[in-house]
Length: 77
Image (cartoon, rainbow, N blue to C red; front, side, top):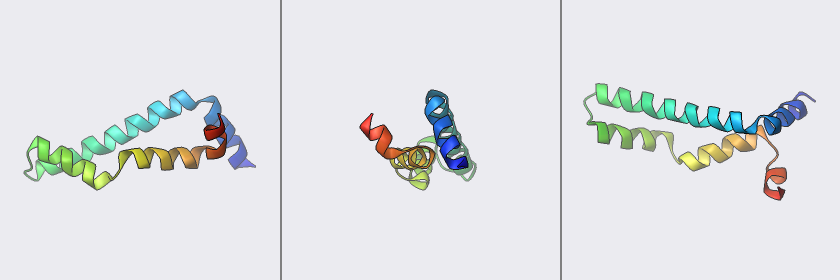
């Protein structure tokens, strides 16, 4: 039952959750890139390395949304 309420809450607060997700992804990318720069990588190399470490950003977004909501409902909508 808790899952149902969590998913309904996500639908109501979708815009805010999407912004939180984007901020979280940016944070992780920036932190990983900073670690790479401290290890001696150029800023460009560090950014590319951070993206490689995180993986497919679009897929991470979709997987996160799938955990938050009902995919069938979003696709139907």
